[in-house]
Image (tube, rainbow, N blue to C red; front, side, top):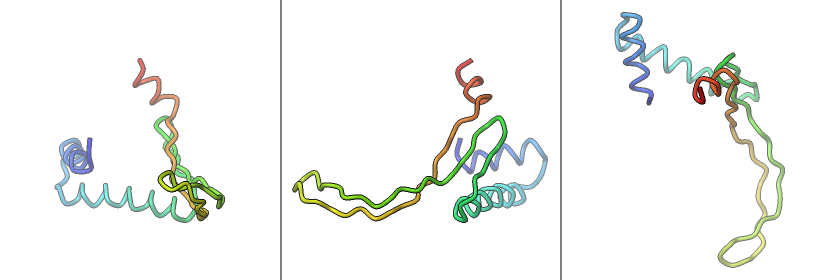
Length: 91
């Protein structure tokens, strides 16, 4: 399912207009993104959680040339599946 299909499903299930459904879906994802950008954790009970993982700087190697390369510190978003979702998918 992609974002457009999510908007369509919300529209059909609630009887609101497509524009209203689009605003709701965009608001949801914008708020999740803002929370992650500020370092907060996003948890949807029974479904999943998102959090930001911090990586320190390190020295890596270029696989082609073998030369050492300094890798800057970085932050990446992570997804962790909830138990109820695991059970539902695995049934």
